[in-house]
Length: 87
Image (tube, rainbow, N blue to C red):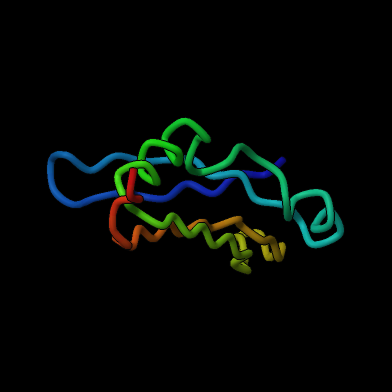
């Protein structure tokens, strides 16, 4: 699996991270691959505290330096406070 190197952050605390990508023919296998962004036990804790957890996973197309077209899975997690459930 190809990877993309991305610089995360600014200044002295910046670091490089390596993210897996998939070439377009492997897209079907890649779309749902990988662990959940929010582990079930963390989701349950947030929900008990009154938050609605919304995960959105999308595929972002990229062109590598060698000309190959690939996609990278990008996840966004949104927490909305909806109130604590009544006991």
